[in-house]
Image (cartoon, rainbow, N blue to C red; front, side):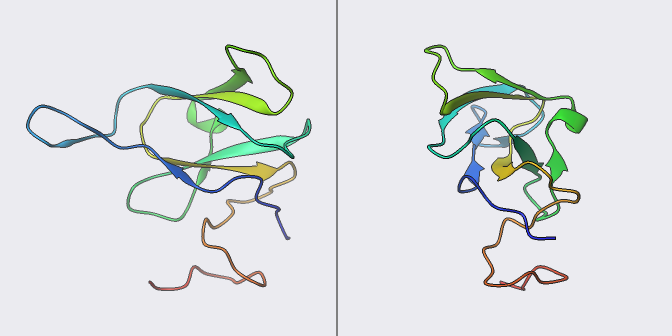
Length: 109
């Protein structure tokens, strides 16, 4: 079914002193999403895949921001990667690629 994206895909990148990518470290950040409402799901996307995992099923969590606002969420993840927020009811992983109509597989890029 169609799933409404409530945010752009946000990619967080961290590097160690040698310039190597750090992905297996906890990360917490805040997102302001004007039309978030009360029902939403956050998905985490690995660096090498457009197949996302629901954040809560991945050991992560969401909560209120440091300065609480109805349009702001705090996202905590066990891994650093890419994140997207979708309207509640996402039964399977939404593709982060925008598409005018639902497609069975991601388009090659």
